[in-house]
Structures are given as structure tokens and as C-alpha cells.
Length: 450
Image (cartoon, rainbow, N blue to C red; front, side):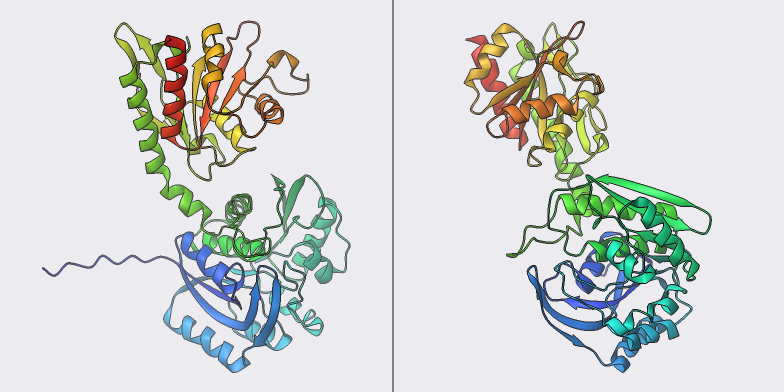
């Protein structure tokens, strides 16, 4: 039969930028990020670069009339809700974009130098940016680019704020001065508008795989603006996405690799499979009757999505598995955000080994501790009483899990919390998949029951 179509109408975002043959930055990064953010990506290519993860091999600037034709073709046919610019290369191209005003929700990423260090903007074109900045809803320079635009030295967030004010004085509605190039354990991004300053902080990720980071951030922000988000929310969402995209970067090519443009989409898509895996594990443990391993507070099976960063991205048994006269049973079903204690242990373990995705807590008795020797893998633990006074006394401290990982040869398959006055000790089993987690529980149970 003939089916009825069901069209959708996403907002349209136009990116005006260069092409990256390596796929990690430029137009390619922009379109991946835009589509992942639920918008429809269109493009006008300014330059064709021959590059990969190790550097730029060559660059060919398209004729200005061809760039203009692309922009006009898109804007004549599509209701463009936001525009972002990337590599514009020369002043003639910058002037061409300025002539296209008004430009809705214009996000200007002043691409001057590639992550590899290769220059992507002719020096004489730097001054031309002032007219484009005056049309921008947001300008997103990194510290090096902000130094060029403002003739300031940026060594700390205070310098970034001053540079942001200079850019706003040039006519931009707002400036986001990024802190990725400023040394420190934290990445501090500073958003400056006419009447406010907002600071965003993220722990720095120990990686050089940041290829495409600026393109991804500016595209993510433009996409949120196209959806109707206010500027602060759009910037916050873009920064959160980039922080995750850098941590779970793409190990491709011989160079440092690229950020993971689709990381949030892939993570969201895995929620159902993760929840079902936890449910299968719970069912297996109920069928086996793991009563001897269930703590007085109950047992929680937890599973994290592949790129989980928060407890809301960890599925767990709500109300826990408890002992009954007839064995064990879960009090309620599985949902994301439940099982906070085990979820925190799992997330803390993922800081050391992001491949770990599943965890279950077991009671700690002499028999259980002796049975840990039967597990194939390292067993490590910590004593909460040794926790430094300046570390928060939470049930599942990152400090304690960190101690266990530091003392272990490789990732431990079990982390032992020795407990403290008034708080019983526990064992948390860890695994990369739910089947392995169940096998470890059954190995422990077999040893206890022998």
C-alpha cells in the first residue's frame, strides 16, 4: 500500500567554513554536531583543506563568487534559524559574509590557527573580523585568538573576562573566551555580555585529542540558539557537550584524534539497551537466589551508558534487591537515577577505567572476603577511616575508589569498602558488561556456599 508521509520540520543551521578532509573539524564537524543536536545542517564551503589528525597538508580557497553562490542558494530556499562561521581565511570572504547581513543568531568562531598549529587565516585578514564581530550574537575565540582580537595577554579567567569585554565593545552581543589553551587543572570558559559575566568550569581531560573542539562547540551553541534556547542555556549545553566529547574522544588516525561530535546522541541511544541489560542481570541474580551476598541495606545492580558522566545516566534497581523468606526479589523496577550509592561508586571507577559500565554491591563478611580470592582479577579496597579530613564523608567517595584503583594492578574487579563506625563494609563488583558482572557474582556465591 501507499503510506502517508510524516515530515518533520527541524530548525535549519548554516555553517560557513572550510572543509576538513580528515573529518574531525571544519564543515564535517559542524554538520555532524548540528544533526546530532536535532537541527538540519546546511553549508557554504570556503576552503578545501588537505588535512588529517597530524596536520594540514594543503589548502585551496574557493573563488569568492562560488562561496557567495552557496550562501545565497541556502538562504533563498531555507528558513535559516542560526549561522555559524569557521574558517574564512581571507578578508574578502569575511567581507562577503558581512554583506549578507542580517544574519540570524550568528555565532562567529574566529578560526585562525588549527589545533595542530597550522595557520588558517591570512594575517592581513585579522582586522576584517571587527565588522563581522559587530554582527555576532556570540564570538567564541580561544585564548590565542582572543589575544589577537584584543591585543591582550590571557593567562587567567580575569584576563579572559577583560578580553571578552573588549570583544563586546566591538559590537558583539556576547563573547565566550575559551580556556582550553590556558594552563591549569580546570578549563575555565568565560561568557561576557553587556550586563553579565558567567564562568563555566570543567576538569581538564588529560588528552591531546581536541581536534575539532572549537568547531563542535560553536556549532552546538548555534544549534541550541536555532532551537530557541537563550544564550546562557545554549552556551552551557554546548560546553557540557564538548567536555564529554573531549573525554570520550575518537581514537582515529595516527595523530591525537578528534573530539566525539556524536557523543550525546550515541549515549542517549544506549539508554534502553543499558536498562535492559540491568534488568537481565537482576533476573539472573533472582533466579540464582544470591541471598548470602545481599547486604542488610539491600543489593543494587547498576549500569552506566557508554559515555555516562552523571547518576542520571546510570540505570539501577529502584528500591534495591532485598532478601525474603522465599529468596530475593527487587522491590521495584529499573530506572535511571536510582541506586545513588552504587551509581557513585561506578562513576568514580569510570574516572580510572571508562570501559567499566556495570556494578553490584555485596555484603562484606569473612566468608565473602575469603571468596574474593576466587575472582579472576585484582581485588582492591580502602579504609574510610584513613580519609583525609578535607575530603567529604559521602558513602561512595571518589577518594576511596581512587585509593583502590591506585593500589591495584590494573582495574580491580572488586572494590572493598572496609566500613567505619556505624556503617557496614561492602564489596562492589565491577565489569564492562552485565554478563561478566553476573558471572562474578555467581563465582563469589559458589565460593561462599562451598
